[in-house]
Image (cartoon, rainbow, N blue to C red; front, side, top):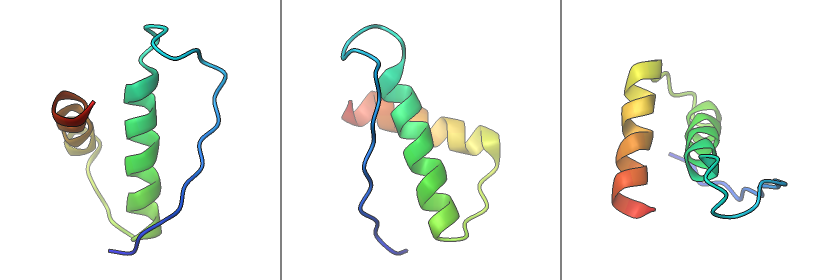
Length: 57
């Protein structure tokens, strides 16, 4: 898998309770999957992102 330098920009205030961290996890996972030509089923992607949220955020 290749690495990537990613920059994210948002106008959602930190800790605003708007699931901004979950959105960031999903968009990052989608970008990495696309960059590496990985095909991940949507439900599996959601579960992977949920695990990341629970374990790292």
